[in-house]
Length: 437
Image (cartoon, rainbow, N blue to C red; front, side, top):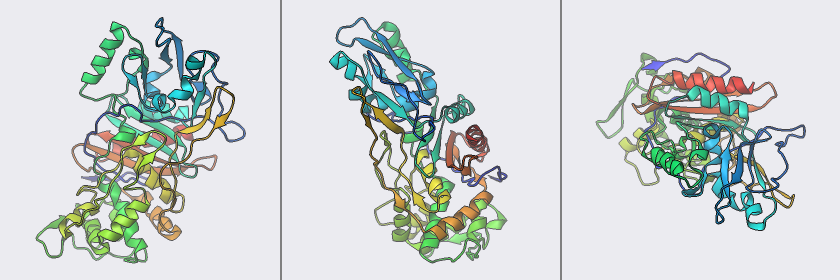
């Protein structure tokens, strides 16, 4: 069940299947971005003159407002390409409240409503070309895609499908109520932001974390050293055996094991490294951390309770209680692409207040050196050869990075429900990178 994905400007064909869904995010979570001007900062229009302020992508407002005819809530939110940007903006409804950036920056976006003057704007980091490429490529699938600038942490794409148009239920009419009822009854859960709030088991994409732990703690000097792992690895002190799916997994090096998703090798590495070393490396790479971008992401976690040897081996294969979001997957890939430095993803470039002042959001989430530069370079050299892998029946993943023509390092993570060995997710990732090149 391994299918090799050939090198396409790439790097990590780390694929995994994730388990399905988490609850739809409510009140004040979820996220967005913008194109840059000559000075490298996001270009935007000036604050709104009346009504609600706007959320800006690529220098253009993707939200608007119109009079509602209701004194208590005088303006109704409108949107441009609402389904495309819903994972970025969230929604603002006269009957059903707010979420996403609409909730986080409610005071800025409604300043004019409260004062009778102008409102402020929220300028995002999203690149409209990358966002549209991801959205179009995902189509009607249940999936998510994240594109991240590895150096700056700017989120260039944040897509979740199926999506929804926030304008269809922003008012207080029977039509708005009907639209909301249909969305909340839809078994595909379009209100769930899968890029931030879906955190199933990472499967084979966790192999790179295990490999990093083995290198960081001196188990191996190189990704090309043989791990001397039998094809059917029996966990010491147990009858539990973990098999490699390919004959190449026998006595494989880390490089080969990454390429062929050799569970036998990574189960052994996890046991040999030990829970403390594996957990420490995972946490340095962003696990067990709260992360706000400023939308709150579901925490990606590695078990903190003591594990048996069999349980520890299971975590080495990306199971056993390990869970991760698409955002975290892209973040780890970015860290390896940029020499082992972990960045905090950010969705908002700046907030333009009604009084003309500008505020830049503060980071929330770990950053700094996650692994040594040598470990990052060793793993980065191995990643272009990594094969994709079906993880479980719930979905497949693909993560990679590429250097763009302007010198930017961009990491991409894609999750698609239903498994095809990651080739479908890989094609989507390629389209996102092509849109940025």
